[in-house]
Image (cartoon, rainbow, N blue to C red; front, side, top):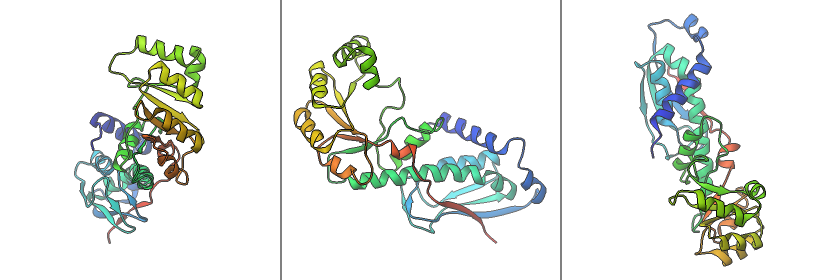
Length: 279
């Protein structure tokens, strides 16, 4: 697993600028300039870790003299109370970087933890858990990285790396067949075309149009099973809509190839992680 370095640097600097502004007034006024400290970053609850490199970059961007020694890797399962990393060096730098580093680590680990849970729930089926574009503005690269750390897969990153013809495209274009034909005529041969459908009749129309993937949107289980019978082996089938931890296993057992879950990123709860100075 890798994080795009440019995206990482840009995001970290923007977050620090937002939080620190012209300076950490409290720390500068209360902590001696030459003070040094050692602190432990640890979890308060079980989960799956993501964002260790991001947290390290936050600390070293604030002060290159801070040393960050990690005890776990992204994707590792951790228990409550487990130490993720130690940081030591100038006390002022550690205090200034603390909140931003934890914000990233908590958010990304929350996404990885949620993803790992969904992946576990569909184990034993052919279905793969994938993310969506329902990400925090400006944090998409990091949040999609966290999905991979949790064992999930990435859907398209943005509007420019895949063709997904959704209901509003279909309405604006004048129907499935017309939208697909226009996409085929204008797209590069390397781009796959996926179409969103809500009924079996729309599925048949999409298959007749020659698409390579179909998104089954908000279908009831029985309808989805019939859709799999119609299209399995002909196109990649993706299920989307009304998917949570209570429904995902049943959806996976219908035989779909992909299950896209917006909740992995748009409403995930941060993992409880803290930083404590040693006495």
